Amino acid sequence: MTTYFQAYGTFAALLVLSIAFVAVAFGANRLLRPNRPTPGKLTTYESGMDPVGTTWSQTQIRYYVFAFLFVIFDVESVFLFPWALVFADIGVAAFWEMVVFIGVLAIGLLYAFKKGVLRWA
Amino acid sequence: MNGQEVAFLILAVIGGLAGLLVVTSRNVVHAALYLVVALASVAGVYLLLAAPFVAFVQVIIYVGAIVVLILFGIMLTRAPVGRRVLDNTLRARVGAFVVGAGVFIMFTVFLGGAFGDERIENQGATATEALGESLFRNYVLPFEAVSVLLLAALIGAIVLARRD
Image (cartoon, rainbow over all chains, first blue to last red):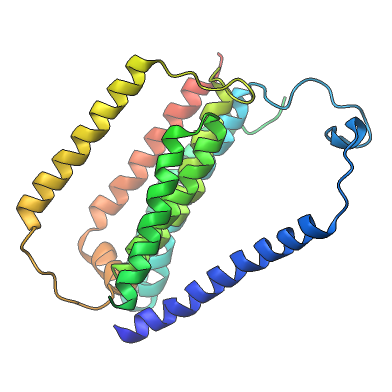
């Protein structure tokens, strides 16, 4: 139990260190840099073009399908971690269990492909 | 106080503050980003409870995927995103307070009443291997059923999102 917390103690130290690194870098930047804003400097940089419209707008529903596909395969990937750990012990059965699991999800991907939601027309 | 309790206190304060900011933020996108902090601190609590797999699931699914879905949901709907601030009416605020306080009291009373005197001994970390063993040996059918559930959700989302 102690080693468990020690292992994550290293992780916690890394987390604190990385937050401190970003905070110090941006804090030092804020203290050292000159601050002379002009309207030109404050506009959004869009490849040298003047930005069109506002940054806040309704997005296309197509993006939602991509986000949802990501969620589905994210959930799938969660099951791959415990599976990878016991794969060698259980053997062929574990392999086919995962084949069925991914196969069922692949039907969904095939459906998405057939319906053309993966294509940007 | 031992290290575990100190860590819990820090996580509880961060998570609690982030949760408060989620509901008080006047910008709905900022609220979604504060939700990331709140959910991540919950993942930290899972780690403290010696459940590393649940903690990583929390990070991968909730911080990674669910927040993405929420952000897309915000961007798709005509929610008051951006400069237009949320102007919640007094009635909505009172209603939200009543519901929040009710859930809080219910949880503290019921959980306190059910497990208040119970002492859970340190059992060591739950090994992810043990979880995989039981999942892929004893609970194969429920595991495969999850794939069908995900398939249904995916097809449902595509049907809803398509115009024709």
